Length: 290
Image (cartoon, rainbow, N blue to C red; front, side, top):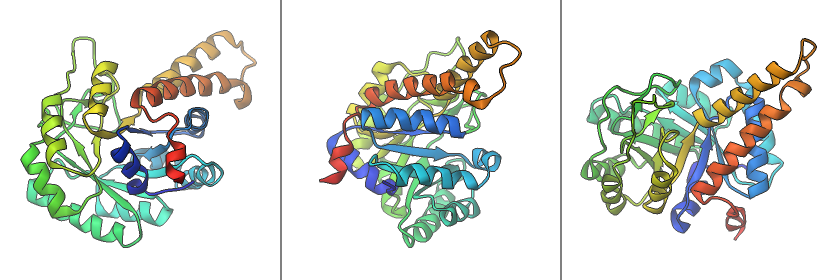
């Protein structure tokens, strides 16, 4: 069932769980994620970054639509980290049901201006909008990018930003970074800041870059109001590690996709299932039919 970002997150916000947003940047990753969601009956957001879309080409969106239209699992197709108004409009034309405009690196007033412009265009076609306030860190190992120094989201500013722009969800900066953390970094979430934001902002809150944070912290973030969590590195590393094992043990004649990928898809599925359970989105599909 294809749904908008607002529809999929409203239920999560009301009940108190987080919808996983998987960056499934290939048909095989998509298959692994969808198998996990079907088995655990979890709603899902398929997030596609502009760089992923450029690599996969626009036809990949039709593949995601096919999955969405042939399952009872609620599926949202989301543009992840749209960098310009033009990228957002292109995504809307392709059939994305949710878009993110990431203008967090701009001055506050400029962030408001472009976010309002995107909201006006997207809402006119029934598409939901996510924006970002504050800056997410960057470990140097992710297509999503980020910054060297995290700027935490100010709860008071967040309240004003949501009122000014009319966005449907807000990505906040509470100490995460895109990509996998190096061994010398010990990431910690500012859950105190999350508490303050959740008190002032009623719309669903989004967590980016949580791949290396301890499960205990992520679970606490969900309890405190995070309703969407982006997962990219974890499923891709699982896929890659499985592929290495297949290639190492498969011999020289290994070349057919139907012999190369099954174990990789299964590894992706297992990681996706772990995240679904951690986010408490398992067994929530029935809630979307009430």
